[in-house]
Length: 134
Image (cartoon, rainbow, N blue to C red; front, side, top):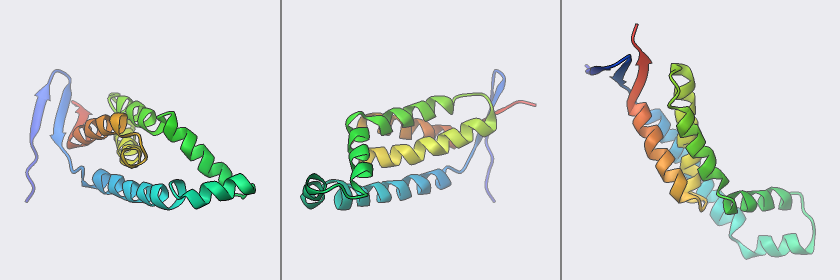
């Protein structure tokens, strides 16, 4: 039987949650990002092929490279973590899961600094899920 711990602080109630779903989502996204990194972004043969002819997958590859250079995944995961601090219970749960997913991908795709911070924040938010006191 699982125990539920309730801590009351001001107008918020912190209850223990199960962040395993979010961690599994982040792991899946990290595995997908790892495949993208080592089989789509880094191979020199793909870069050479894009220089010689404009293939259909060159534009998405270039967009992904530009997004990682601009630290876009890290910024999006931090924004999702910030959005997860909103008091609406549904919004912050979806934002925390989204932040975990993008943060998991960002840690593999060259945006580890901001993505790791967002990953930890979202994981903590899911572990201590906020709900308004009734």
